[in-house]
Amino acid sequence: MIHPHTELKFISEEIGYGVVATKTIPAGTIIWVHDKLDREFTLQEIQNMEPVYQSVILNYTFRNNKGNYIFCWDNGRFINHSFKSNCLSTAYDFEIAIRDIQPGEELTDDYGYLNIVEPFRAANEGTKRKMVYPDDLLRYHRTWDKKIAKVFNKITKLDQPLKPLIANGTWEKVEKIISGELQADSVLNNYFDEKQIKSTT
Image (cartoon, rainbow, N blue to C red; front, top):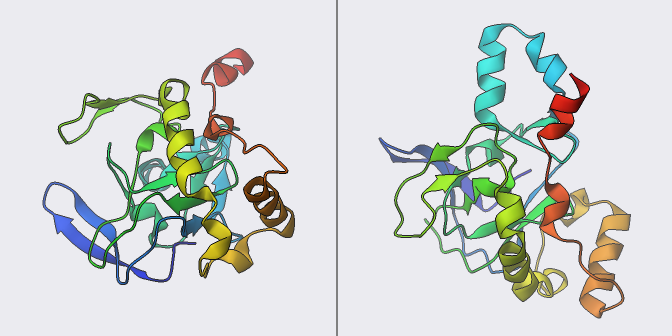
């Protein structure tokens, strides 16, 4: 589920629609949680679908560390890519804002950690990276982990509308990470190795 202080908005002809903030969303805010309405499909399930469904699934899903496709039921599926994303995924089935997001500003992800199937050239943002690859998690997880770590301790200090959707055990783990009792898991835990599919076919 996407944060309630967001809305779907037309961004541009090139980009299409995206998700923008309707109020200030402070750094450390949980902006998305994998909830019970999100659908998870195996590759075989998708292959058995009619082409019209396959197109929708492949266009609006990301893959988890099992290689399954996650279809967000709400506007979460419209979050666009940016090499300078203001949101990052964690290893705990939720995403957080890594800097303050202002009203009217688009929420963005780096698709490099979403286990994309095929590489693609993204819009030029003046960064060294121009392409997004299926194995970007192997290259950039340390960078993303550092960005997450800078704001992670704010999670329990902020108003979190999506907290009720987070399992008690996960929230307890978050609290222990912030208190120093546990080491945070790397976002690399989200990586799916494409070789796993090839080795079973």
